[in-house]
Length: 170
Image 1 (tube, one colour):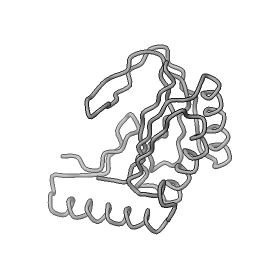
Image 2 (cartoon, helix red, strand yellow):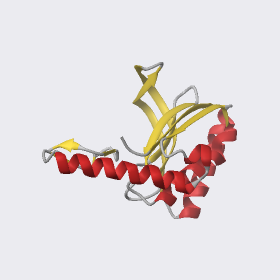
Image 3 (cartoon, one colour):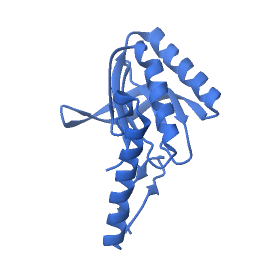
């Protein structure tokens, strides 16, 4: 449930990593979004391949961008093979934030040898704000229905990681 943008891909080369970081930093600064570098010597990234869980262990680098207080962080965190697999939930922020995140992903897409985006709001494919807004309205209707029907639920809840859980048991 929700309106989330999922993305994954492999950069063309090391120079592409610096290109993506620079483009994301410039975009964030232009939009007034907070950002911070990612440079980890040893971390674990939870990933899924062919519907199976697999974890990456090792160094990462990239940039984290914070587009809105009611959106998740956009983490462009690449492993040693220049691969990224991430998502960002934008549904609690204004629809324009979702549009801007898609704009940023489209801007950096040429740096990738392979790049796939699944946008639950369908803006990536349609570039139609009315389609995105319809998805957001449907999402909130379902969440409101669940909260009304099940008093043991609460939401949304922001986790310490910055991720947002739509519904959780009290």
